[in-house]
Figure (cartoon, one colour):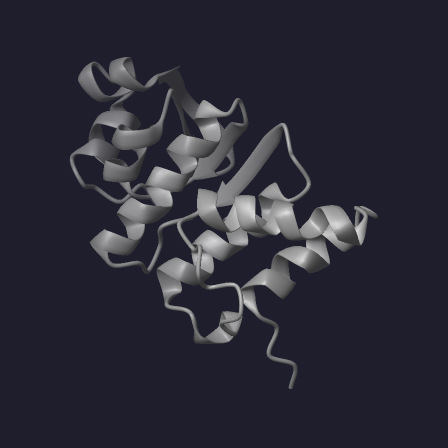
Length: 153
């Protein structure tokens, strides 16, 4: 089994877009620094903690300089410290102008990160509002129930 290092994980993504080898080392260092993994270049990715693996996945996805990033439950199964570090990376990435769309069931994550909230239920948009309005004055009964902790079935 191949134990690709953290740097090799990002290098693979950069090579897939034909970035010259000479430019990759600097880009890898920049991305690892962005996600708080400087000094982890040679560590096997499979030996990183869950939060570190999540941040490495973010670095790998940023290797192609996306304008838009879709993240599915990016802090699920992480302890609070690891979740905060992933959220901090998302804020830093957004500050660089990358639009981030996340799916989450975690209201705390949505409150801390969302500019807009879209509540989906059974494949339909139930509510779409700026985050502040969604949490202060939900327009729909489903949104009120969801915020109260009810399961929407």
